[in-house]
Amino acid sequence: MLKVSDLKKSYGSHEVLKGINLNVATGETVVIMGPSGCGKSTLIRCINRLTEPDSGKIIYKGIEIDQLKEKELLELRKNMGFVFQNFNLIHRLTVLQNVMLGLVKWGWDREQAETRALKVLEQVELRDFVHARPADLSGGQMQRVAIARALAINPDLMLLDEPTASLDPILVGEVLKVMEELTVQKDKSLLIVTHEVAFARRVANRIVLMDQGVIVEEGSPQNIFENPQSWVGRRYKEMIEYH
Ligand SMILES: Nc1ncnc2c1ncn2[C@@H]1O[C@H](COP(=O)(O)OP(=O)(O)OP(=O)(O)O)[C@@H](O)[C@H]1O
Ligand SMILES: [Mg+2]
Image 1 (cartoon, rainbow, N blue to C red):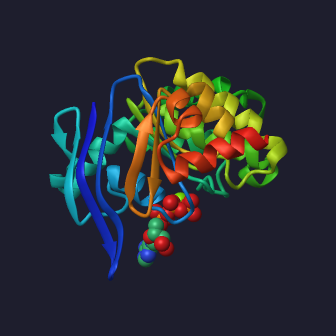
Image 2 (image 1 turned 120 degrees about the vertical axis):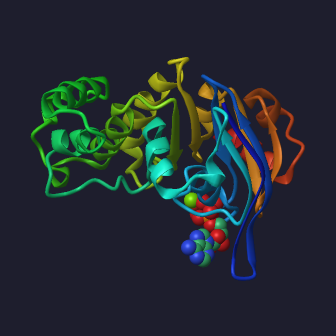
């Protein structure tokens, strides 16, 4: 459903993505891993053009994303949920309003939007917090709101950029649990950047390892973590053995 070919992005003379090729099939969960600064965020942000790529093709269900005009791009983003490391919630709005906002923006009437928002908040186990404001929530709860917001529109593709990286380790589990539940929904594809090795090993259909703007290795979790071919893969294998 998603096919990225020869994607390149530079900032000044710094070539951050050096020609990335990546496919994601319907229902597939792909986890992207790699050292800090290797270009993971840039890659997933280029997919829905939160970051503008310099060149390359991004084809999503037959649509050439790289060619879309601003208006078409906004329309396309209805089918893609994006979850950020730092949640990006609107602090003056309640949990319910945060989740409803996008739906109302997409033209849903308020009643429908509220019903849908309550349903996804239930899914992430936040039904009791719908009238709270983000400031009253823990980081894990805030991230679950952000996931509910991304889910609300029922996207085919979810892009998650280190959704647990800024959480207290005690709260990571509750967010991983919600994400794991998403991976079993076979109508959704997930592209997740994370350093959570145990999670990746358990839920990923495929692991993609990046280093310095290129994909250095990809394969099943078993292949990558047991018999890595790349330097990056060997580092992750060591991490597992150390634990
Ligand atoms: N807007 C920007 N302007 C200039 N350089 C940038 C910009 N965004 C990213 N970079 C640089 O591009 C490189 C890749 O950044 P990116 O955020 O994609 O890495 P990452 O793999 O997501 O790292 P991390 O694991 O720390 O999140 C880094 O060297 C970063 O400094
Ligand atoms: Mg990043």
